[in-house]
Image 1 (cartoon, one colour):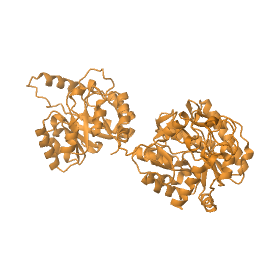
Image 2 (image 1 turned 90 degrees about the vertical axis):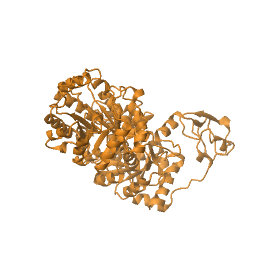
Image 3 (image 1 turned 120 degrees about the vertical axis):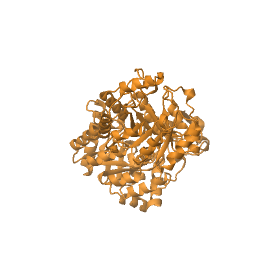
Image 4 (image 1 turned 135 degrees about the vertical axis):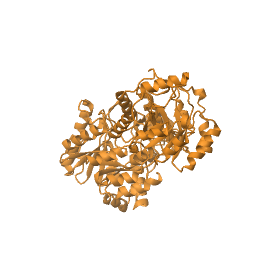
Length: 607
């Protein structure tokens, strides 16, 4: 179990109102919880009317005021199932109350509340359903807990213990979260935490002590009158709790060494510095510190390595304001062999290029396929289309940005910047297509959408692609990572990376660009098998970006450097008869040295 599973308990916070109950369900679903749980008591005979107890009187009055029937609970369960695939559970307090439900197929799990931990008839009755049973350990001492666990173990059912302190609300100093470690060591490795904390953040501490399930009451208002509202959470708090739970195991994962993620590499380049020439330098000149100035961005040699080159002779003329690169001092430029070039062209291997790299790319890598990776500045600048060679095939990667503070949104007709970039990309594609007699795919990322649901989004996307389809170009949205790099930081992406996205893609017959790094990272973050996704969507893949990855944020790795699953993904991807663009980090630098290294490794490992 890679994610912490969050359960929203509705309890009596529906106030006995079916409409409020459905609103709570809607909010729970929208927050992203794993499951929703109800409570049920048949109030007939539940309390002894002959006994006058202050606490019992308060609870009895609250339950009478806020109860709903078994039929209403069934209706609510059906409502959950029509809106989502969430797990649905219920707490019972008496074994006879199970008889009020003719069909128990609505429930995916049951909960034994703290007050009924020692109620053997109830536990035995729940065990006969064959469904998982969560047992809450609140209100009881160790000896009683041992007895209850011995009994449930004897029943041979699937069960999970939940640490609980039954105060409403619970103050942090009373939560005794360290007991979670005792439960894991003494009773069961997988444990949960039933939270009645005044502060929901205490649940994060419970996660750090090993809780794999977090159960907490949901409310429309923490200030509402009633027994449970003050120890419950609002929609916003649940949303935060789910977000933390989804990433908690990734946050706390152990690493033997520190590696630099893609976002840091981007920021290191844009924020860091390297040495630039402060005047024109001729071939044969000896490099001295006086010829250099240290500036951003970091495009060349930095302080860690500059001393290796001071006093060395340059082998080419270098204009002023040029980043100092290692190849300025080395005449060796090992080009690809004939066999390596043939391998690339036989397998439709492509290389990314910016417009200003095009001539160098032609010289260094005589491949049949080239992909333009364009910035918004590139698309808005003049380009000499005479540089397009008619014997090659080109594709275009649409920029993620439309400006320094805006992302592209191809589906928002009101987004003027996006419309300009799209129009320019289509102009480029049409001109290139006319010069080469080949369709030019336009690859686009869709990191977010303003549309309300995925259903609407994928319908709109399908329609957009169909309307835009022409003899000259075809839009191909690409598979995305769960966490993408935008504006110098990591952003959670909720499109084109999960199994439900796969279902929509197949349902609407949307052709895509598969990015192997993104697929590997999404699979790691969202706990699915990357190879299974690749196999299922293979008929819809019309273009591939190919590189390896580790974890959820280390992408664009050269072949042989990625995770164990990378090898199988790359091997399968190479067998798909489409263009495959090598997307390794900084592949264009030093006469495309890294791109050439990547091609050699691809040959060595997969040829």
